[in-house]
Image 1 (cartoon, rainbow, N blue to C red):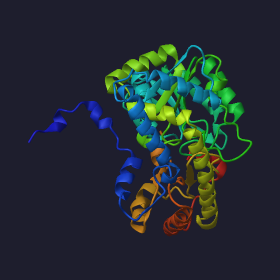
Image 2: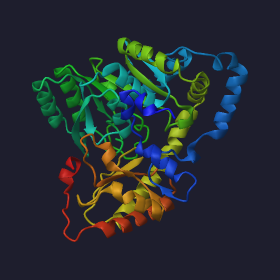
Image 3: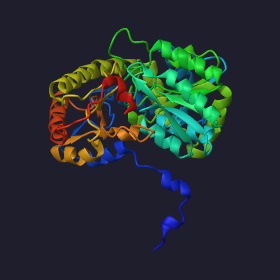
Image 4: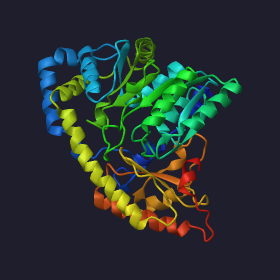
Length: 418
């Protein structure tokens, strides 16, 4: 037998399995209420419209749609994407360019490969998107986490950490943030903090990676959803988003917008990865924009997900153990729950929850500093409202069994430091 472990590159050890992906495998085909992966509700998929679009594209534009296309993306689609972004309030400058990626995960991978060298430093929120952490870690950087609260990244702490890293001689490559409808925390950065973040980036000559998959789904009024990209006056923000939540994840369409120079470099990195994103799905997505299908899907999903978010918040209020805390998500697809004792490890609770018929994502994977053992991320977009209610009830009963008699309560003002 070939001993492949001796032949693999050292970096192979850095390929961490996504806990969300692993949970999806565990729950597939089983009668489990899944509060785990951020799957869209299939009822929002515009199946009939996409079937009609796919047929029209293949019959009327098949010579192009079934052919190779430029690495940066189908030219007409890129123009349609820029128009779509501008209609959503995202500023695209004359010296910007756009690159179509195979989902936003490829965008994260390309950013990691083009920006980060071993022992560089990057800055993320605490907690942050676990798949971004996995992509960045392949390049072996140091990762500094900045706590967040209900108003987003604590930019005062950010500046102090930047000063500390500079004093240590660290080379900071970028700040990665999900400012609107954060994954996993659900919070949204205030306008004042967005402006402060840009001031800090300017002062210390830093780049900001703005990940924006969820700003399309904001359920509460009086919430500022202005993109950092729109506020940026110096070309410091590289903006990325995806069609996975607003049309269909199976199309695998994402994009990056930024200064032409950096997008050109990222485009060359993409050439070595897959030559180009699937031409056919680009044509389908383009027609979905032009025919108003994307906007229609967004409104349908937004209405449905608000009902589900409210159902989860109500169930948490009714069933969750005393002393637990969660920020109310103003948008997005998730609620992050902080349990009232450090003695509870949500990873260790997961097998018991799965046995009882409920899946969730343990929160520690979202914390770059290894914290968050007492947290869990709960998704409300996929399950039905009645499943959400029952899932929360079951989880609460399991958690109650593990609450020690003398528990250390975590106060909300300290919650994101846990």
